[in-house]
Image (cartoon, rainbow, N blue to C red):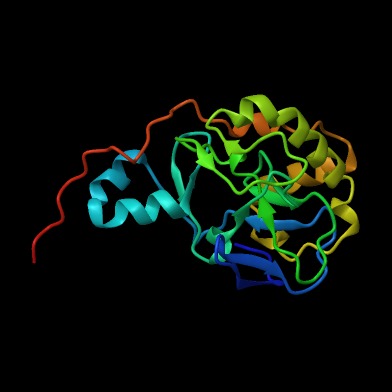
Length: 210
């Protein structure tokens, strides 16, 4: 579930639609959480859906550490990539704002955290040494993302958290322990999936004739 103080908005022709803040969202705020309505599919389940669904699912899903494909039920699936994201996923199935997000700013994450199965070529961003998202970016960039998350967690208890009620109780208690400094934050590296099977060249079942 995406943060309630957001809206889906057309950004520009090269990007299409994106998720934009409608109110100020401070650093340390949960901006997305995996909830009961989000769908989880195995690789084989997606293959079994047939060719009519493969392109859609390849575009709008991301993979968790187990290699399962996650399809957001709301417009959280329209979150766009940035090499300087204002939201970063955690090891706890939710994302945090890693800096203040003013009204009108687009919420972004780094697709390098999403276990892509093939390179993703991006629009250039000034100041970035990266120009393409790679399937192994989590292995190479997790320390930088961890530093931003550790800093964001320091604000977790100081800000309003409208999405906290959607966290499982054990996850919520873990997040509180990390925020209080009672527990070391689990690295985002735990999100990495070693299974690199792609849906691009899969031999899917033909669509059933009606």
